Image (cartoon, rainbow, N blue to C red; front, side, top):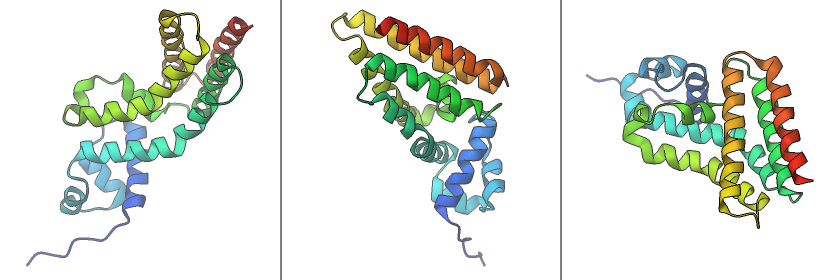
Length: 193
């Protein structure tokens, strides 16, 4: 006789998944880790989430809801577009400096080899684009009238800065993180003048 499936709060489970994936990364997290963090039985886990990839994408959605919305609001501020980009870099640095050793779950995921989440690659790309597209649009707005290439270069610069800040945070270099961000922000603001 089979036992009844154990009841659990899906929202609470996804919140815990966020923490596990954020601590360990996608590749190093196992279904056993996810189960241990929530107490969900294996059968109930698979019935509710299908697989680790799906659980990760749901956790990434929750993370994005909780932590990236503020940054996107900064990018869309009605001030000078380059000032908004500079403020965005400073926001990312502040966020990361409060999480030494962890970095940003989304930025860290973007840097992982795409084959890690091969079955759900489209879903991962869609979630990354939800953050990267507004960043690219802000760079286009900042370089309006200077040509498409100028916007691409600015986008590459800002993206390199935030990915670099994330790498510093993950390596525990929180002290230099904010100084590097201030330097990058000042360079962007200086160009706006």
